[in-house]
Length: 361
Image (cartoon, rainbow, N blue to C red; front, side, top):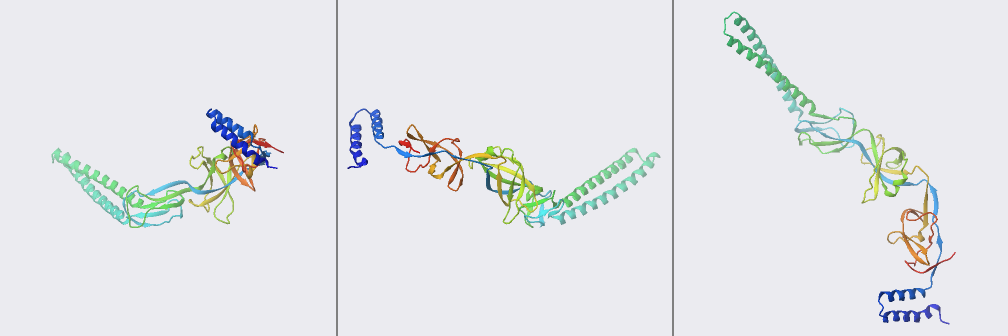
């Protein structure tokens, strides 16, 4: 006795020949396919519903330590850098010397300004005494008023010269003091672009500092976690190996999802003890609420391209796109595209869209 598959071959050939000879166009082709499909035995398939799990979702992420606030350190005076007192990673206190610029030059300018003050004081003292003599003489009508006026003008010029000398000295004193660049606040040195001997101009960036007593812990979170973080107040993290777990207080959640990575930033803050900007951090993010999630066996998901599941509809295979998440012991989390209780084909191997199927128990 011939098998069913052997008996089917003449029917298939006859059907195709009739379709090729008939001049009816696309309608006839459709008729041929329908005729062919009627002769295909439906594939027997089983259906399953997604497993529902109630859990508090968590995800492990690689984050980094960042400065809470940062400053660019520059010099208020131009000159050659004499000495750099810090290295990257050093913690500094407010007012601590970081580097010095041409300090000897500004010291000499200060001495010069102080000498000019002494000279201006002497000139003013002489002009004051001369004015007093001229005052007596003009009162006695011994000298004309014009001579007295000249003495008065000389006195006023000497007084103005002293004021100018004092201002020049104060400016020289300021330059001498700021030639030592000091930390504006307590913090840590995070960058250095200066060496002893180089010339620096006013405002040129020389050092980078992270200031304050806190740092940020920053991690990028997959976009499908957006709805799961409502009510989050912090997260756990570790740095390095064999280090204790620490808790960061939630600082901000980026409201924008980055298109390229489909992720967004979550930022926490923590005291800076033992932490330096640039360190890697192992972040564990746990949703604050228990949620329901759907899971399917690996065999029920077509993963060669965009994840899909097959469903039996009107005796044929329909395709549904889904978004998947975590994997766990042969199971895959379904994030979207499928509702609780919907039935899918249990094993997609060897199946394709529109293939006739028969659901069996």
